[in-house]
Image (cartoon, rainbow, N blue to C red; front, side, top):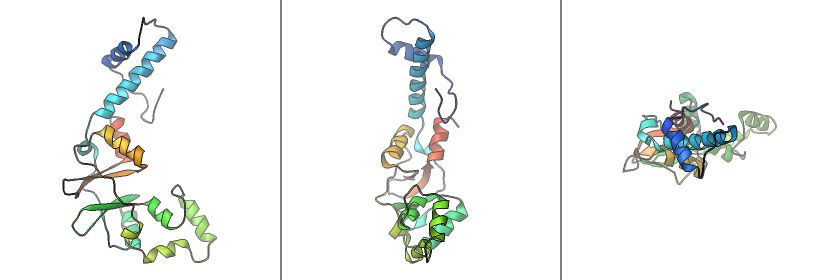
Length: 196
């Protein structure tokens, strides 16, 4: 059994915990060993997920967009930074939304899973390319809100659950006043779970 991290090192405690969780007499056959390994692997993965907090895996400083900036300016900034999404802050510096490639695609009438080639193909076959319609919009017109955020103390396991529950790829990390102090992306989360 492997995951996107490759093989995981199991501690002796992981194996012993797995053996203790099995009921009855343990006969070490290939099937039994496989069962022990899978149980130990799951326990090790849970242990890794339980370790760490947002402030240990987040990227900082976080690049934010302003609520009132134009969509074209936001797209240019994101392209220049090489990011596919960014938190949006209001006039007081508080996170009020997130803008991602999915938001741009949605406003263009494309499904959120559309690829760059979907955009090119659609633009080439549509009079007055659909991207032109975005020029009149502001960031607040396309951002996803209400925003899902976490604190620096949020456990990595909880961050993983938030990503899955809300189908998001990035999570702004905010202070007690809702101001951004960092961001955790799926890449950060996978790296943490793989021990990188």
